[in-house]
Every structure is written in structure tokens, then in C-alpha cells.
Image (tube, rainbow, N blue to C red; front, side):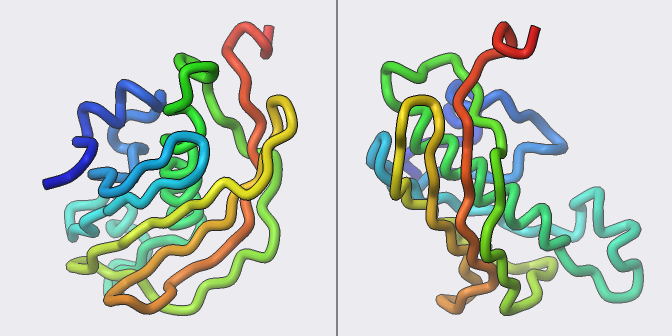
Length: 148
């Protein structure tokens, strides 16, 4: 039984289909870490063009799924409720294994540093217990009002 369903995830982060890239949250320590899952299906819209004869989940979308998992962790804190976590930077991204239809992508993001509205997370995506992608992600917490 998941800790958070898709509906509950959408109460924390602003992403919606087709860009919501996590299905469930299995573990959550607000402000510290989150573990999510994504069931990768042949029905994903990006498989129509990436690649038609050999569907592979784009690496940038794996990183985005990790970022969304981290956003659930950081935005679950009462002080950040209703805010948005924006990308500030991506460091040391490495792709180790293809993610294909039928895979269960396990997304783990740990918040390793926060100073004011800026923080860093260490993120790893797994398939069958093996790392598929790893990265350090920098985020900035803001609101739509900050952009105006």
C-alpha cells in the first residue's frame, strides 16, 4: 500500500498528466527524503517518438521524475506548502541502464542541503535494484508571485 497516491502527490506538487512522472510515494520523511515509483508503460506519450522501434524513457524525464520525488520531500514541510520547487542546476548526471516499457522505476531523492529557498538533493533511479540514473539536483523554492 503506497504512502501517497497520485491524487495525494498532486496536492503537494503542481505537476499534472502527462508531465506528472511519479505514480506513488512509498516512503517519506518531509524535508529529508522520499522514495517514489513510476510504472513505465507502453502508453507513455514520449515512446511514440523515442524511439518507435526501441522505446526508451528519455534520460531527462528520469531526472525530472527524480526531481518531482525530491519536490514531494521538500514541499511536504509545512513552511513550503503551496510553493513550487524549480530546477536550479543538475550536476553529475549519469545514465547507467535503459528504462523501457514494463520497468518499475524506483525513484529515491535525499535532500542533502538547504539554505533558505535553495537546496540540493542526491537522487538515484533504480530498475530491478540496479541504478539506472544518478544525479545531484539543485532546487529553488518559489511561488508564481516570485516570477512576476
